[in-house]
Image (cartoon, rainbow, N blue to C red; front, side, top):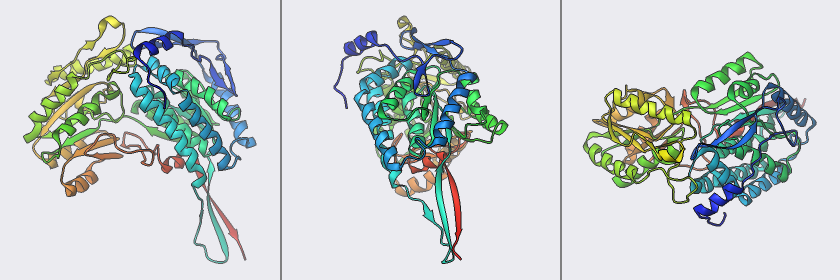
Length: 499
């Protein structure tokens, strides 16, 4: 995609960077109506990157009015799928052209390693936009089997004005998962990035304009959840709100939908994913690698993080030893160094929250097998060592609550039945892993796991063709795949009497 750069190259680019800082409303970069700004901070150093426009209800009202006008006059919603495809393909091309810039913004804003930001976040985001662009002119409507005296048409209409509220752990990718199908379906979209990580969203607005999206069709409102997010949730002219974030905030958005216009509210919320390794696992080294990757990748700030390692007794000690060794090799480093495998926690508040859970685990009797402390203290940033607890029972706090950090709870079980029971004893149901060489077990036990995604003999398997979303308090609806279009369209039944 882009040529390889060194750590010094990225540091030089960071020193010369001038990011977008204004909201994007009606095709223009503008200050917030109040004139207020807020600081976005580099979590690797604790220093301020830029002051960002702080939008509030007044900005929301203006953006929604412009989005509604754009939708109603058809400048985008009435375009043919082929024309929408052309613009979105151009957007994907521009994202790849500016991949280094987008990756740098992502790394500076939320602390993830630059190599991962480039290869995973930016690469997958561009692929997502391209996938929906290519799909939208291949989705057919239906005709009902109504007989010769009537014609029953079943069609999909764009839903209207869509608000997308996205988290800070994968700012660009989570935005792409939502805006790509929403735009492909013909909607007007308003994106509210997390206040910790607004920079790639604002750059994306610039690229959308360059790609040819009409004014008012895509807008970006930086701001805070209790003001900007709440105003979008309660707005009577927002038809759909798609959210990724905590279950606590997701419940608030459900309330906002009910208190306003019964807008469609789609949620991808928390997780406490079980990683079940049975004694007949084919490759213990592979299982150990994925166990470490599943919790330490992106500093554990992953909604599907494999944070509960549930292991049959006979292989428990051997697997734990291997995971500890892998964790020791994944110590945090400078996120701007392409060799770094683990970066900074997004902000000081989140770092203290994770350290608090680690203290809680010790107090409740967990055995700290690795890590547990703040790292790179002299950097001024927010780093935590890879942390592994053994001797954990499923009723301990760190085994039940989402930590959103590099903290692994290892739970010993006697057999497969107990493993599945422990895996399902959880408020969440976003994802689960299962390791076995027995194809019958793989099928029967994966059916018993109560999760929206089940990965067998891997962690985080799948591609854009696979739907993503959760059971239970992990949310509703699905991102990715053609199923995502269900969230951003309304089914219309048209009955034509031919007699």
